[in-house]
Image (tube, protein in one colour):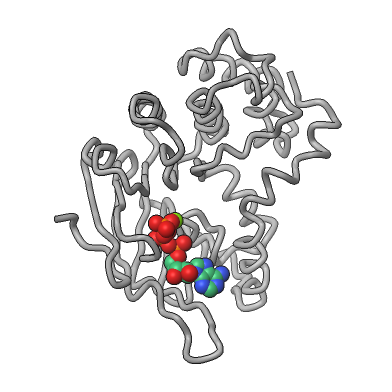
Length: 269
Ligand SMILES: Nc1ncnc2c1ncn2[C@@H]1O[C@H](COP(=O)(O)OP(=O)(O)OP(=O)(O)O)[C@@H](O)[C@H]1O
Ligand SMILES: [Mg+2]
């Protein structure tokens, strides 16, 4: 089952969630090298690596340096929690890992590829294929059903067809929503909506799953069950998982934990 045409046309509310970062990416695109060779330099490495990442935001005075040399190496299937004070740059870092925002300096490799070396259309395809996002807000389209929402990231793959609808049903079954396929988001609880968002993030079999405060809007019990789903599904899909959270309880459930403080990632204390 494919999303109805009206549903696709009204995709904007979801995309607008990432629009500001994509806009800044487009502006930076002029600086990007269009040499595809650079994107495949170390294509044998699977996982995520970041080397000396910096990110400045311009201000009227001197630039605000949010990231000050972040280094990270995760193998495929690793799971990492990132904590840190509000404003320390956790979302900024996650958006760079997700190729939604461009670093000021340094390098990111996802499965050995530097996404920022790709021209924009290929970068968008790369992001859609390799990376799944779960945000604090679910950003489901209210006018689309649960199944349609999950299928939205597959719209750009013309040959997806029945197999992908079958996968969507299977994943929704796995998160306990098999009987809610035709329901609209307004008919779901907060935890159920977040489960749909997780399935949507995984529908294209991304190798990297990035979650920014995925349980931030949920009560403790629901947060725990949503965390169960994230951890189980990332493992089942062998996706590399990064969860940004203020919750010590959630962070403690991930095997690796780092803290972003003063612009650098350090092992969590
Ligand atoms: N587009 C922007 N222009 C200028 N400053 C920005 C921009 N985006 C973020 N910042 C600043 O960068 C800093 C880090 O923001 P970020 O959203 O990454 O923090 P965070 O660690 O995710 O915080 P929180 O835990 O509250 O979500 C903040 O001081 C923020 O004001
Ligand atoms: Mg944040």
